[in-house]
Length: 355
Image 1 (cartoon, rainbow, N blue to C red):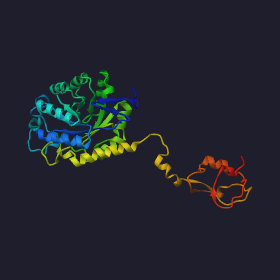
Image 2 (tube, one colour):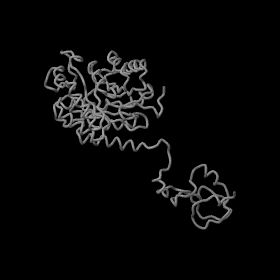
Image 3 (cartoon, one colour):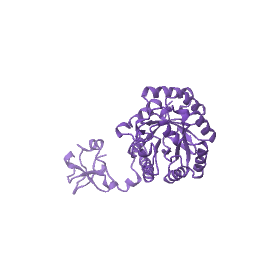
Image 4 (cartoon, rainbow, N blue to C red):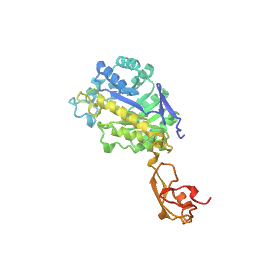
């Protein structure tokens, strides 16, 4: 089914979709290093900057990692040799997540968290999270996605680490659960930070065309230029990591925005949205005041009875009120005779010709 401009997904108090404001997610992730005081500061900053939601991550390491699992390349700079240990140190408690959820309510910002396992999923569902954001690592995990889809809540699905064929299979799987009207498919490149040449924003209109769903963008570049491009290409959701300080320890700090950059990123998106305006081309009210810039048709001095040639005509600025030098107008004028003397250059008018 083709989405219309009225189709949307509702997350909390926000409607997400075509002709709706972009839903902006400030991704705290694990950048607070399991310290509640830092997490509260991040929520404060996200709310103050105007983000719609702040997102964390909920996981139980033993449910998602083998103890001898291999580090991804971007985490190899972290001194601890064990990928398992790195994440074990960042594993949030459910009690901690409850406090973050309640603090977000107090600050009037939507709390989101990515569940990585069934226990975390069930906990977040019971907590009352309004939507599920599922990571690229689970975009082809249909065992887990089935559990997510059965909850019936809006699904923000990242699509990093996947081929087009794999995404096709996942979308078909989601269709089986009649959840396409609650899906937002995010173009994602799972590298931290992502090189600009690997962002592939052209996937966004392809997703819209092929799957007929709402589409977003998960930005892992070092700045926010790609996010702005994504919005112009149809993304109705954007998410980006942020941090209190890029020099803090942690796997995602280096690809995150600092507070002043987060503020600027959100401000730029809102300015860009305002610039979209209408798809209908018209003279704006502000342009009406500058209409004298527009050239109108002018005729040079000539005697009554003169056959009008192209050489007698020109286009000049005047009062903005007159005949436009459009070809269909010129066809009606050239070759006709003047019925009046033209003593000085003046704007052309139809009363110079026989009716």
